Length: 172
Image 1 (spheres, rainbow, N blue to C red):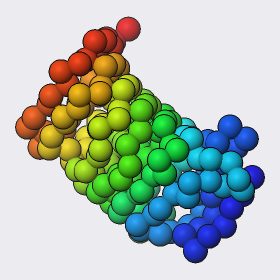
Image 2 (image 1 turned 90 degrees about the vertical axis):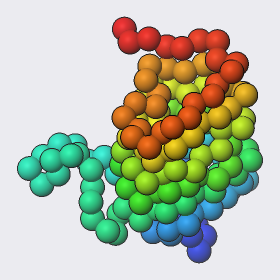
Image 3 (image 1 turned 45 degrees about the vertical axis):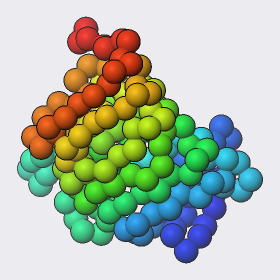
């Protein structure tokens, strides 16, 4: 199912998961619904700029200016989950507006500039979800579960407060 707007083309599955986006809007607002179906999740690798390690890309990230366009993302209130690697390698991403309940594995891996994320409704943060981001503070009453090393290699992170954390995942 596809939906076109001035911001580009969105593709969604029947469960409400955004599976693809075509466009290059820097300040992207994800619609509340696509063809009458509420957007409930951002799918695995939907916006990912990870292309694999090669001689042309020694860090595994797509560095071309056209594909790596995102500066901010605004999520609809209906969106509850961000999939695995959903935004990984989005080098220009600075902020995500809107709060979700679940953040998937390595969702924001290598989003070096991302310093603004709303944790107010977040319950679960998976493995390496914010690996190498620009977060400086994590403060949430709602987070109860994390995977392994959700905030690894964040050099400017100076404050973490998760008072209701009940389950911290460990490496297997």
